[in-house]
Length: 299
Image 1 (cartoon, rainbow, N blue to C red):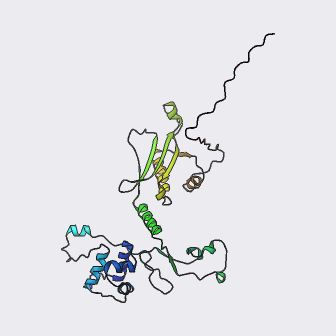
Image 2: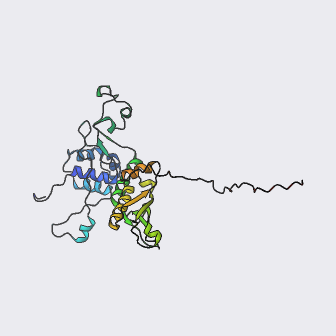
Image 3: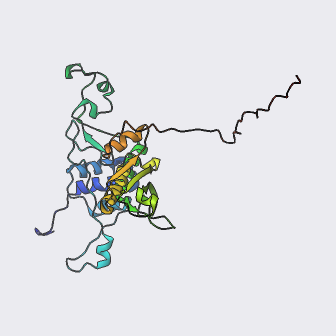
């Protein structure tokens, strides 16, 4: 390696590899055949120059590949097949002993009691530090694999989701529909609205203006709390600006009220309440019996 070439920090690279494969040091040791103690020394920097065979076994255990090329002679196909390895986001976070936090977990620094799930009492009592039940750790992380997978999938969906206005299939020009899709065309969210106005009712321009009525914002249950609904509403607002429409109406209940207020809508207290009728499936209508006239009595 010459001085002009960047130096690879093998410890940080190995931690990034483990995170990409979601493996602990023990799991990587089992898959690679490299002792866990060796992996720990490499990541801590105590073994800065392991032999090539060790590195090859570690990289191969996470389905990685080592590429060796001469500067200026790398083929385009090899360059396209090579992708940058995302660094561990909490690389600088350390535990109380100054050690790296587990790379395959999502760690964060603990500064206040409510940063640590173990300090459940901090949510209910305003206690001074001298009365805290246990000392706070320097960092915390989630061990639940399912929760970790859901969180990382949510981060990927948040990065990759795309919002577009849907037109086609005979959709009328007064219908406004926006969809949120993933690169594989999976539909994860949808907004539907329609346009109304005096001009549309009369069929000609009388200067009555145009308005939008928001029919609903739907996001798949697995993708909620990722900001997809807000992005759909923002797409609607941007399209309203382009079309010169300045007013939108909506009726909401429960959590939808707070959601629309957070998106910039104002609560119209003077409007009538939204009403709903729930009927049991297959219920027969109940009608009053007909009223017949009483027979005339002879006088």
